[in-house]
Image (cartoon, rainbow, N blue to C red; front, side, top):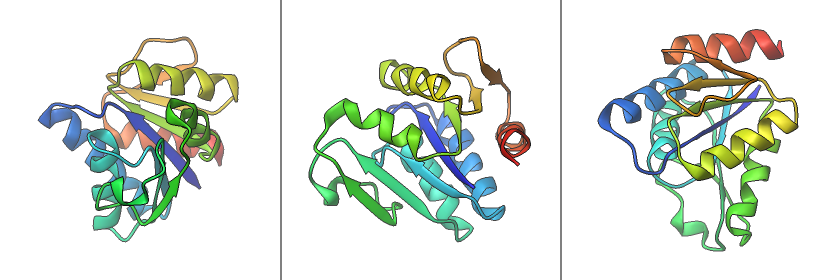
Length: 147
């Protein structure tokens, strides 16, 4: 399964570790991670996934493939700005959100519109999101919702 992980580009240490835990769990379970490719949650989830041999995909808003964080294996440069948010979500069978601001809210809207199962850890409160407290519960939710 491919899981889109979305969230803030600026995060607390706790949020970074939560996202890293999400990445580790996804990698351990053989899932691919797709994200926006930059810092914060995106970097943390990719770092965690790579620690366990998981595959990471970053869909960038700009045209510079070298701008991706060091843990992205497959970089997709779009030049679309925030319009790339729909591509991040579209390329996941499910979505996990950690924290986040306006960009994450946009991605959540797209995810819900596309009927993707969404687990959220400390993110926006919207109908249709399964709010959980831990990475383990987030991964378990998306696995049960897709498989």
